[in-house]
Image (cartoon, rainbow, N blue to C red; front, side):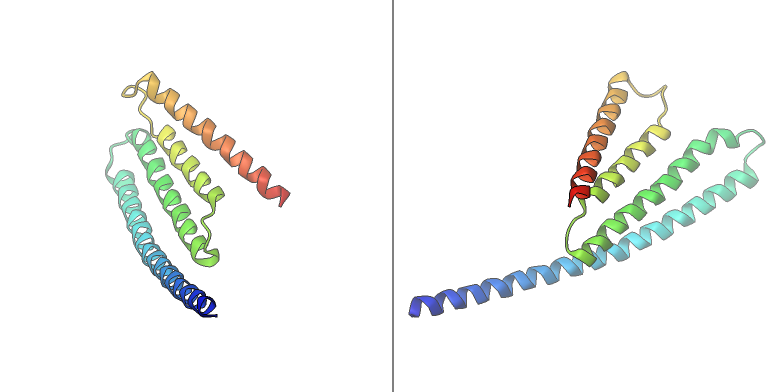
Length: 150
């Protein structure tokens, strides 16, 4: 009988500890969400300032050369929004959504390719990006297929 009571007490202590850890995880997620919102707002401000500067102060014909920088800034904001979605999804379900993480990674690699300066990168870098896209795409396909079955 004593052994049973001891097990109950230990289980109760373990449950209290796990509850404490869960509360800490939620708190950290909320703080990360707030910081990510701050990052997104700052990035939008940066994009607005950059667009204003390029549209109204750049000489005629130079805008095309900065178009890739603008695309990069837009994609930075989209990546930050996806990360925020990852965090808020964790807060809602207490589960990390792997599919969303892979989509975020695909966007990040796509951003890298869009802003890539082909004169400054080697062939091995391009091959590496191709392999990364292939691996992420296959992972995404597998996860989508698995989720469709359930």
